[in-house]
Amino acid sequence: MPTALLKRFPQVRVLLVGDLLADHYLYGQTERVSREAPVLIVRHEREEVKLGGGANAAANASALGAKVSAIGVIGRDDLGRQLSALFKSSGITLRAVTSSVTESRTRVLAGGLSTTRQQMLRIDRGVTGPLPPKLRASLAVQVLQEGLAADVVMVSDYGAGVLCDETRSALREVASRGVPVCVDSRFGLTDFAGLTVCKPNEPELAAFTGMPIRDDAELLAAGKVAQQRLACQVLLVTRGRRGMTLFEKGKKPLHIPVYGSEEAVDVTGAGDTVSATFALALGAGGTPAEAARLANIAGALVVQKQGTATVTRLELERELNR
Image 1 (spheres, rainbow, N blue to C red):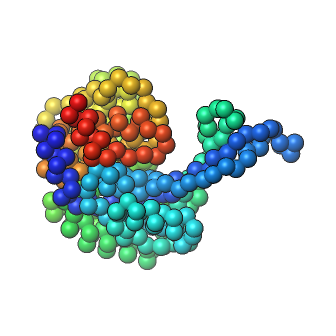
Image 2 (image 1 turned 90 degrees about the vertical axis):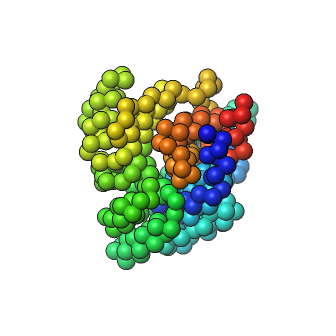
Image 3 (image 1 turned 60 degrees about the vertical axis):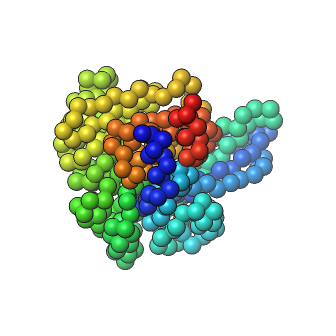
């Protein structure tokens, strides 16, 4: 069945609604300590920009073969232009409204001549308050129109303002008309009650419920409370090295152990890979259990890659055929 689901991925129309981030990497070599302050001097070598945040979730869906559109905000700046070019090269249809600055995360990675580059500093840029009313209204209209034409909607909330009252209202309307809406929210899970799927990790679940999660029993208790509060059909809790647990309305919770035995190389963006795979599998007609098992394998593959990365449909298919 998982292989059959994969074969249907190219027919799935996915809409990503979320905060479109530019992951900006600066690479350099450390030479000495500055005489001006107790900091290392980094000799710049190169830099690159990758699709981050909701943009990375869209890139994962596209790499898995889906027909992807993305709704969000991009700035009228150099990072925005680079981000737009990356969307185009990834085969993603961009439905963005524009603002003055692109939401970005600049990471400085440096090391000695013969050492691995490590992150030394991160600089965040972007909005610091709500988006203007006109932008919010425009986004909501697009979400409703594009969402009703999709097979599944992915929501990626990084707290940058795209997921506001107006867009959440539009998403609830889309879900009420039978289109699955799958939510991954870093900071505002409470605001997404009434949608189809919510995907917190363990710390996010503990923060949302106010309940400690130290073992499986406490996880089950917290999951039950969260599912009731959120009124969602499915709650998928990712648990790092302990795999994931699926709470489906009317069924017993399903524990899925972590796939494979290799240690993670880099967990950056792994949640986006899990979200994209799960949403695509639902959009392709899979059950939540089938979607979760497939997402678990995709997550295990992506953490073997360095930095913000994706898993392709071919990679996933090869792993399933092993």
